[in-house]
Image (cartoon, rainbow, N blue to C red; front, side, top):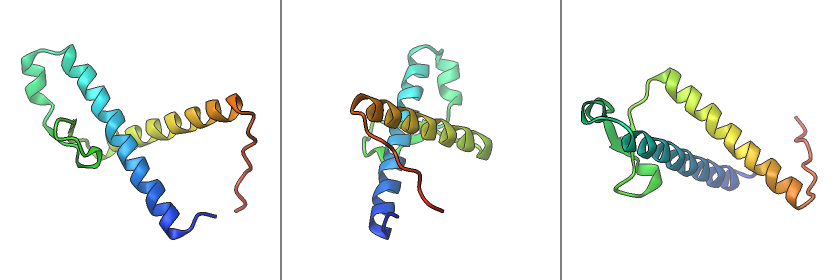
Length: 95
C-alpha cells in the first residue's frame, strides 16, 4: 500500500501526465483548425505542465471525467506494455 508521500507523488505525476496529454491533443487540434475555431477554445495555461506555452481548454464536468478515463487507460496500457516487455508480473492489490 503506498504511503501518503508516495500517493502525493503519484498524484503529482498523474496531473502532470494528464496536462501533457491534453496539451498535446490541443496542439493537434490547433494545427488543423481555423482561426474562428481557435478563438472558441477558451485556452488557459496548463499550470501542472509547467510550460508557459502549454495550453488547455476549460472543460465542463463531463469532459473532465472523459479525459481522466482516457488518461487512466493510457497509463494502464503503457504499464501493460512495460510489464510484457520485461516479463514483470503485476500483483493485484488486496482490498
